[in-house]
Amino acid sequence: MLNAPLPLGATIGMLGDGQLGRMLSLAASRLGFKTAVFGPEDGAPAAQVSASAIVASYDDEDALRRFAASCDVITLEFENIPAATLEFLTGLGKVVAPGAHALRITQDRVLEKTFAREQGVATVDFRAVDTLDDLKAALAALGTPSLLKTRRDGYDGKGQVWIRDASEAEAAFNAVGGKPSILEAKASFTREISVVAARGWNGEMRAFPIGENHHVNGILSTTLAPAPVSDDVTKAAHDIARRVLQGLDYIGVLAVELFVLDGDVLVLNEIAPRVHNSGHWTQEGCVCDQFEQHIRAVTGWPLGDPSARCTVEMTNLLGDDILDWPRLAAEPQAQLHVYGKAEPRPGRKMGHINRIKS
Ligand code: AMP
Image (cartoon, rainbow, N blue to C red; front, side, top):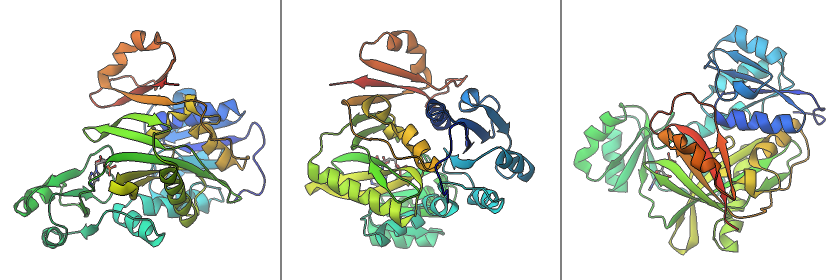
């Protein structure tokens, strides 16, 4: 718990060194803070723009001690930081936001959906799957098509396999490596939306306008925001975000991905306990963007104004898309964001472009 806002010049520790950490560091520096990055990769995107960087694995206790000594508060940009790392840092007397409890729940798809239901938030029907027999029973209960996902470590559509017929059970279980999994009923959604929202130390909450998301091969391709949804959908999505933030006793920014079913019924797909790709549009689209909002929340500053200034279409630049930078950089009414990654491997998030629509 922070008892007072952190002063100008304080140092924010960042667990994780990717593009989200990079954009958080840039936002922090705009408010006069310094950042110290902790992550596994030398010269990573966040380390390039931070005052200091420690390159080490998340279980290296000596490195974590050195990191902790330099930080006034610690946050994260990557949800698969081991909860034990957060507990270790908390044990050193450090303030860590969001906390280990929020991470434990959101790192596991079964715990996450169970939590959502406990908060009165609808999810698709699901069953936990530990064995092939569990999977067969789950398929009998949920029917096909249904989607088998690993409980942990899945992102951007990885660790997921559609099952179209019960006879595919064994092949599907092998395809996810026989790992503890979840079987989900297919959501027949009309659109996918997300809500990004923040909660501060005093319990105050602010939500951004809704984004409408389009995925290609399981990876986010574009977000259009504010999305053309009814006021009722916006209200319902904001209400879900508030329940999730309060239920997790969460400090910082998080994202809730939702399916919109017929009749504008909302169903939670996933919670990301961090700033989110579907919130990148806020950089050009909102008075205070998601990165600054997260920094404000974890440092005990007043939350910023999340209202929209314009409509933005955010497009991810994956792999070789980034090689088109001379043309993208010349576009009017657009802002190019490049993450500083050396190698444009296929599907790798290299940057994004925010195009102002109105
Ligand atoms: P996830 O990694 O859970 O966010 O899933 C990636 C994408 O797969 C989602 O954005 C949806 O497009 C699709 N998807 C995930 N779960 C389901 C489901 N239960 N029913 C239908 N589509 C899904």
